[in-house]
Length: 188
Image 1 (cartoon, one colour):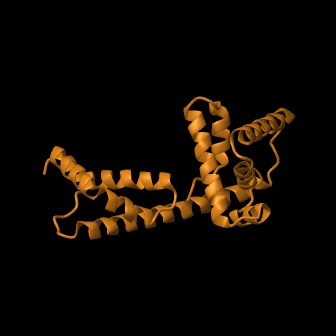
Image 2 (cartoon, rainbow, N blue to C red; image 1 turned 180 degrees about the vertical axis):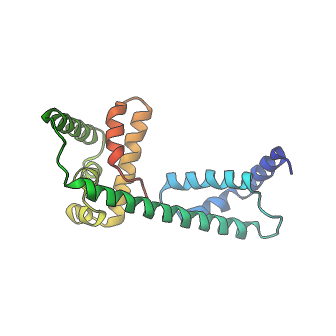
Image 3 (cartoon, rainbow, N blue to C red; image 1 turned 90 degrees about the vertical axis):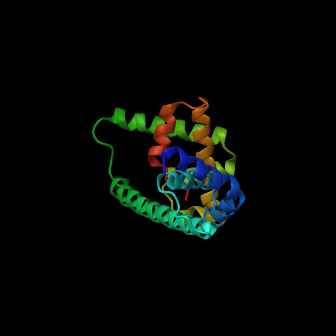
């Protein structure tokens, strides 16, 4: 089967089963943007490795989606663990050398806080600051904000996405974005 015909076949499959595919994905992914990413990943995977000719295509797609969601969750857990271990190593280090570097770091942190508080609703800004500036866990942040853990994760995902969008639109300087996202953990 040629590449062009594979793309056409997968395109037809997605047009024919679009609603069912999106429903299957929504069973495994909560964040709308993650669902869109999974939809695109599924399309690319099927173009690269077409489904076998079988009569139960939706069952096959469900299996592929479930496996992809499981792999994504495993990668996220592994990445979060790595980031947490790295943060634990760096948490208690004092700035090296010159007071100028300490002052620059303080100024950058202050700029990041100002941007977050100016572009995001207060509850979302507070969740991001608690998680990524003060290094609190989702559970600790949830207790401090008097909300549940899923709400904290949603606030962080929504806020970080909004900041990314503002950077893409050119409304936030790139150096602030890089400083913030060097420390941020992605949406789950």
